[in-house]
Image 1: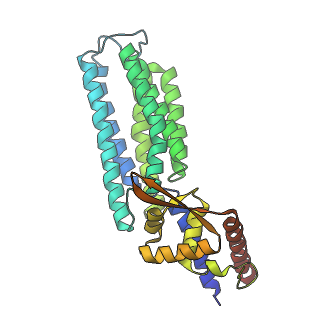
Image 2: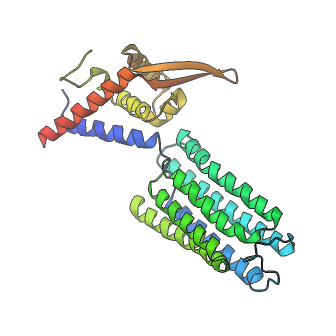
Image 3: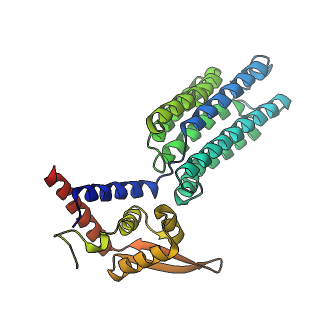
Length: 208
Length: 99
């Protein structure tokens, strides 16, 4: 005959198993903070070297144009920020998974990646289309909106809070599309400040 | 069906089996290797528990080949779902009654 304590343990086990087998919980707050810092540095560099001394105003024009040298630099910078952020997230997740004795690349991780990848790849391709058509100004709002969609989708497969972060990013993307002249500011706020705030919040809530 | 008290299934007394049922309750199907990782048990241990649950017809097996490698996927049967739910409800009411 089992005791009450055993029944409570049974329920705890059931709850943890249901969560572990559906949600990827090896993400860390610190990855969010780092991604935010990279994004802020990237946005600052764009502002410093391209925004202020750009003769053709590709941040506000939607009438088309050629991809020139400084635009290539910006695309390169954006990729650098992306790769650094993803790399940092993988590194810290790997450490966290190792600490809790779990494998990083499990069924929940795969599910999270696939569900995030669908909106992200769609957004990435749309960005490329815009770049080739010279619609440079729309790139910033589109990256925010599709990233937001990806996070909203991902919320089901990892920490719930990711959904709220996603909705905020979508909202910022829409604002950036309407107020095109401030789009870089919205981008820096979404990818930079929001990531840092989210990272700190998650760290305090789950890793303390 | 064997039950300890009304509504508590003997088949779910073991915590590994409870874990298997919990994981299958929220996943359509799960591979043997995935279950093994979640539960942190050996191949033989998991296989014997799966056999027991299969015998009760609480879980079903789908065997196939992926790239010529055998692939075993488990799913929860309707019968298993019903039993697991009843088991959970009973656990809940026992704890409530003792509070």
